[in-house]
Amino acid sequence: MKQQVKISTYSIVINIIALIVIGAVMLINLNRGNMWFVWTLAGLLLIIFSAALFYMPLSISVNDRELCINRPLKVKSIALDNIASVVPCPPTMGERRICGSGGWFGYWGWFSERDLGKYFAYYGRASDCFLVTLKDGHRYMLGCSNPQSIIDYINNHIK
Image (tube, rainbow, N blue to C red; front, side):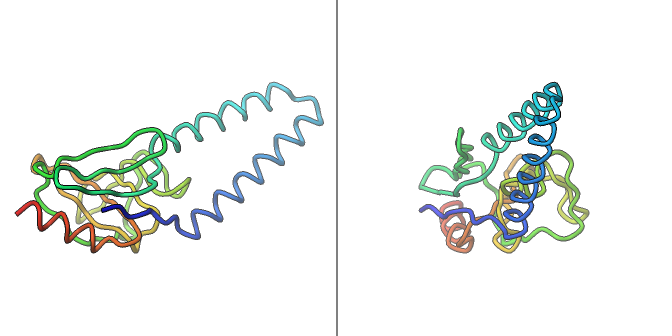
């Protein structure tokens, strides 16, 4: 079973605005001959796009053995044997980003909430989220277009 991750409208708008502003700043500095600034900004863009390629979630899939977070350059796999629980759980407005993206091609990275503690997130819209707790205590906040089907599938296979 595979479900796509839908990126929130907020995230799409922020990405478009950021790229337009960065592109305009690069063009202005290119016309002024500030090549060092253009190259520095290009390097920073390369870094943030590389991070997005490694971490932004594209889809969530599950089979009889593992839960997979499909990303552009790598797949994160979690064995179903390691999962203790899966529950619907949209993040609250009280979440704090420790290290990661708060909208740059989705939400990914380490976050913390008072009620949940620390978790690693891979989602596009907060309304699509569910919390996966592993037997070792690690938590993952995941999101996809039909989270209940993934939750039901996993819960049927971990009992």
